[in-house]
Image 1 (tube, rainbow, N blue to C red):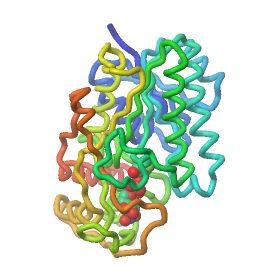
Image 2 (cartoon, rainbow, N blue to C red; image 1 turned 180 degrees about the vertical axis):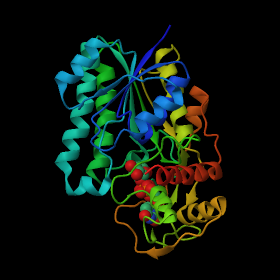
Image 3 (cartoon, helix red, strand yellow; image 1 turned 90 degrees about the vertical axis):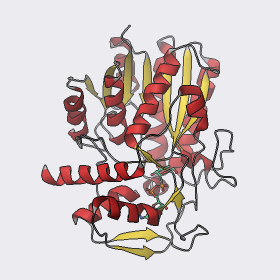
Length: 341
Ligand code: UFG
């Protein structure tokens, strides 16, 4: 039986890769996006890679009428929610913008799922909910620490909204995936990360420096208590991460869930320092990056990486692409963008 998955924010970086993997796994995919933070590059890329005209709705998930109409007109078996703002610094400067958008949109999805008599809901959460954990790697049982930004707070609140809705409303099942640091691009180089303005995240900043769009990469802090003094993160390949969603949707649609609400870490289990990542990028792609050490960035944790073993035990998912392949794909994507300007 064909199953339909609605991907909110499906024209964005993670949503587009997830849409490709779902479609290639045989699901009917519907993409809905308000296009407030992207153009149609990734949507077109999804259609090209899959060879399908993926149904697309331009809509704002904060508009309950629009969400209700969508749920009434399509038979949706599962919904994956990506449509949210994600810039940590901006969320500190404009908290209400973040609370309004990130919470209302998800509330509307849960309401529509309830009104439809139930649905399977996958929420895109983040390792940010762990803050600076005292024990590493973090498991799903590690405590969530108070969020250090409104953005992080919306991730925690949305997790709780999903947990509570699953407990209260019959027919809703939910899974939160806590992503570590997604990087890289599809091997076709037809979809990837498209930051607007100056990138906040490390890998787009690296690739834009390499291509000459940015003059110099600042490495924020080299005096952390880590082997080389720079922060440690768990960089997860975007295609591996996208595949985790296929496993998760299949788990929700099957009968294997241990609980109607579950949480999984989606990472590699391998800590990599900022400096290692920069040097790896140089080595793999045969180039030199202009970088300098700069003061620490406020709000950064020193180190965080996943224990991803629960996802492997429960769903048979684990990260497979090597860091070298991922860093090569990030560079191929940046070059593709430059060639197709
Ligand atoms: N970094 C630099 N220079 C830059 C950008 C980043 O040195 O120009 C460093 C940061 O200081 C940090 C590391 O690179 O040590 C990774 O930073 P990112 O901004 O790429 O990623 P974060 O770990 O800060 O945040 C990411 C996502 C968040 C998510 C968080 C969860 O962007 O949405 O992971 O841990 F909440």
